[in-house]
Length: 90
Image 1 (tube, helix red, strand yellow):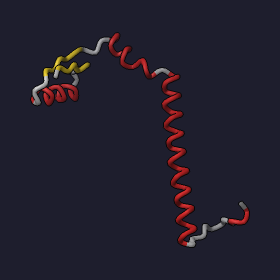
Image 2 (tube, helix red, strand yellow):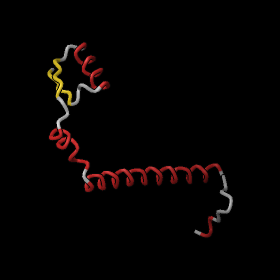
Image 3 (cartoon, rainbow, N blue to C red):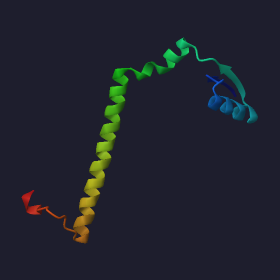
Image 4 (cartoon, rainbow, N blue to C red):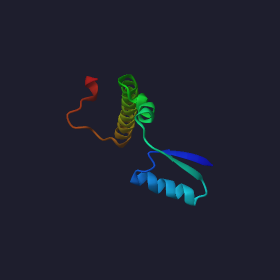
């Protein structure tokens, strides 16, 4: 397989290039030109970052809610009472 590694002269990428070559791949190293870097990092604009952050926060909120819900179920099954919590107040 032919693979192009952008910025392959950097130490970490150079070691990746060597590993790929050892595995029999044909590897080309491309320098990191400003045009190439801009093309690659275009997705990092404010709108994309906002959407990505929103998605992550929604996912985190759903995980927290699920953990809270499961904890409530287990506390009820085990008869554990939370200090300062009045179930009738809900």
